[in-house]
Length: 162
Image (cartoon, rainbow, N blue to C red; front, side):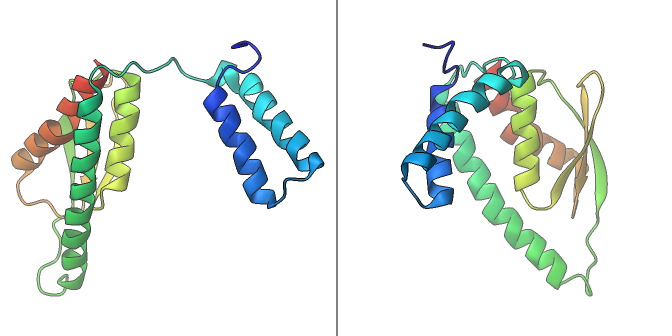
């Protein structure tokens, strides 16, 4: 069965998405949705990365909550920085962050986190994955920012994936 449907949750999601987008459960849409749900994962299976092994599920929950709080806090800081730019312009900077995280899934999650958190932009990752270049909207203390980044995001991701 796993050869026919290598990713059952993905197949079910594609089927449901097809029906939702078409707002119809006609026999033709059911057939097309089922075909899409079965064929797309089969054709894309060679492109799928290795499965991630989550070592500590509660660390995932803690990280999601922490990122949510950081998104709210960073939104407020960026809004303040934009509104007060006439009085005190933001001190934008590129920061080189040494990384101990090497897992591809962890690095992908780290890139998504930096994309979601306002005020930070993932700029470049060294070829050997040892240094991340990050652009920060308003940087007060580089050493404190690096320590916060590593403690808040990198360590939990290492705990989860490595």
